[in-house]
Image 1: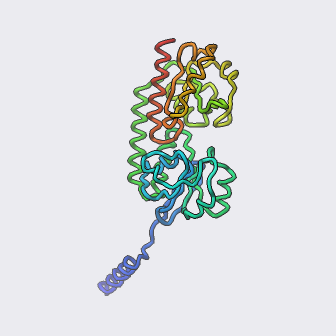
Image 2: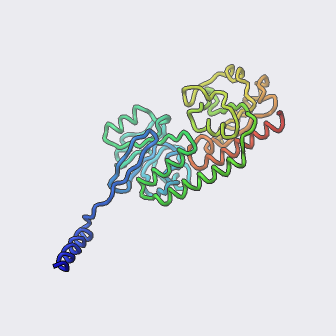
Image 3: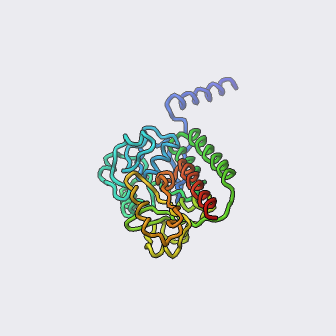
Length: 297
């Protein structure tokens, strides 16, 4: 009798297994706004609405799942081959619809709020990516690995990032404060507050963001306001088309940073994008602040 029962149970299991009716556990992931998402299986079609989100998805193990992205999504090299659906501040809704994404990864402080809401209204699932701390970068990679079905890869990348962060902390211990003005744009003159991860980069290097306490992530500031703050150093986020920014500061020798020749370029991608590469930008920031300390302190 026991043998018969065992045979029946074994047979039922085989039927469920062969016919694909074995119940698969749901996948759960949480975005940077705390919204929990449930997926029946790994996501196969994703659209990224921000360069940093594209880079994070690749870091988490994405390969061909990204079917659309925005301009300036240029890292890693494979990202350049993905079809564009607009810019981060204005996307083509019809083109997005034609891609039939299962998930859209958006950037709350960079994308149009109106367009994000429209995408939600159209029934698309929108996962927000907005890392504000170093640890958020690691957490974002792990969460993306969950819905991509690449948890092992994502966990390894996340752990390596945190290990490198720890090593960098030992290399650059707490030092005397250096007052920093970070330039994100020249006309109008714009900076980043401590609501952006760049504030943590500056603080990590024992710096003080002179406009860190502003409520807006990327506020406009006047040259008069910069003169009033009189920073020790000016760090300008550079790309190939921004080389003239440094020369523009030469006429403002009333500024301590200009008078002491402490106006430096930094690769904007390595500081502004909330990805594992931000540790490269952090190291460069710390090097600049150390130069300031050694020469005029």
